Amino acid sequence: MAKEGRNNNKGGFKGKVQPEFEQVIVDLARVTRVMAGGKRMRFRACVALGDRRGRVGWGVAKGADVAIAVNKAVSKGKKNMIKVRLINETIPHKIEAKFKSAKVMLKPAVKGTGIIAGGSVRNILELAGVPNIYGKILGRSNNKINNIQATFLALAGLKYPAEAAVENKIEEIKEELKPEDLIKDEELEEEQKKLLKKAGLEDALTVGLATLKPARKGFKI
Image (cartoon, rainbow, N blue to C red; front, side, top):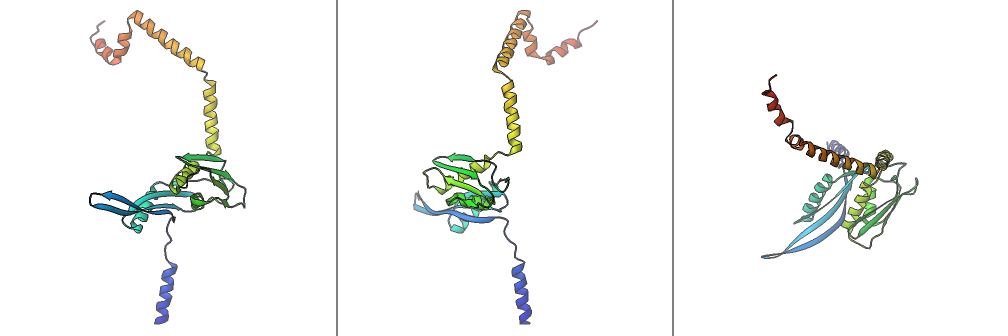
């Protein structure tokens, strides 16, 4: 009977469900606030989470206990998820992003390079599941939260071939529409308004078709 119980326990451990996202506590600090009755101490947690398959997020929250702060930060991070798409196991192009005094640079790398980055930038890239990439903190700020936000701005600002083609097409259309043509259109509109004023039809146009329909009903041939 004892052996059967042990086997059942082992089977229970095998069936344990793994969490959807992997969590990393990037920063944990004790903060105080001066209240009427004295100082109130709380904990602030900055948590990054991801599934290592392209989805990554982060959140900051405060709580009376470390566990409460972490749970709040995780729930916020799940609402602030972004999707990172890869091309040849890396990002499509080099990009720099700045948030306040924090500045981050991300650069694509060849297969087999790995993640060459440090600090909070490395945590985000690992959770996002980017296998090969160069990352560097260019700013002088050591604030981990600001560096995380700069990293997310860089990842969210990546442009992919299809999107780049659409933007290039829009720019070509804008270049074809010369400012001279726009000026000519505005001049034509002004001339039309002047002619309508002379003919006395401007008031009829501003009133609209709704006021002209009742007049037509009373008209007899």
